[in-house]
Each structure stands twice: as C-alpha cells, then as structure tokens.
Length: 205
Image (cartoon, rainbow, N blue to C red):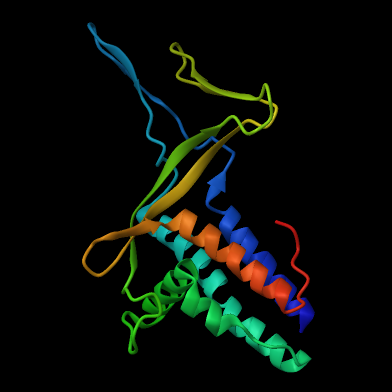
C-alpha cells in the first residue's frame, strides 16, 4: 500500500513538473525579410496544440485530486486519522482542483462544489520564463542571431530558462480565480503536508 501511495505522490510531482520544459529546440524564430524591413517573430506556443495543452492540464489536476482517495485507503489500512475531507473544505486551492477534477469527469457537478464555484480552465498557453534565481551573481540571457534566427541561452548560478505552460481558472461567470500553475503548486504543497501529518513519507520533488 505504501509503495502504491509513493508512486502516486511521484506521479503528482511529475505532472506538476510537466508544466515546465527547459528544452527550447521546438521554438524556431521566423525571419521576415522584405526590401525595406527585417524582423524576427517568435511564437513560444510552437510545438503545442490546444488538445495537447488540455491533456497536460487534465493529467495534473487528476494526479493531485486523486490523492484524497489514495490517502484515505492508506489511512484506513494503517489506523491513521484521515484529514483529506477537511483539507478540501478549508483550502481554496485544493477545493478548486477537486472541483476541476469532478467537472472533467462528469461534465458538471451533481452536488454543491467544494470551492463554492464551478471552475474551468481556459486560455492555456506556453510562454518563455526567465529567472535569475536567488543566488548572488546569477543571471539568465536569451539572444537570437539576426542572421540565422537561432536562439541561444546562457545561465549562470541559479539562473533558468524554461517554456512554461499556464492558463486561467475562472468560475461559472468568467471571473478569474487564479492561474492553474499557482493553484496546482499550492494544492500539491497542501497535500504533501497532509500526507506528512498522516505519517506518509513524502519524496522530495
């Protein structure tokens, strides 16, 4: 049982990590050359499709939300107190992920939503994220050769360059509840803390 739960936790971590990709080889800047104008167009959504992005988001949501049932089964078998229901009822991010999962499975909710909303994900896209990190002297640089259109990245210290998938989570009225990456990051952390309190060893991300 612990081996299964450990695998589910690692799947949750892997799905969250799937929102970032450090390989920029799929991005090819387009060079526009006319007798009077020369410019470069970079579309960071290259290499993605609407369906592909939706699949990544659905996998992440499912891997986080299903933690409730796996932890519940583990607690029942090991005589531990299960706090998953309370977590969903008191943590907005966990509740939103739970409702997104149920909306994905059932198309609609047949009971009041745990978050108080009927959320959905929209405007999924891939963008470039540059970070210098927190180390002194660290840096990140992205350059494009104007002659070849080739992209080049340089990182020093804790700098990073990633293609990041994100999207908006909105309620049934279109009101923004937050972005999917941040909501899932916080929900994952909340489940990790709940797992630890139940005595489950949580592997490092």
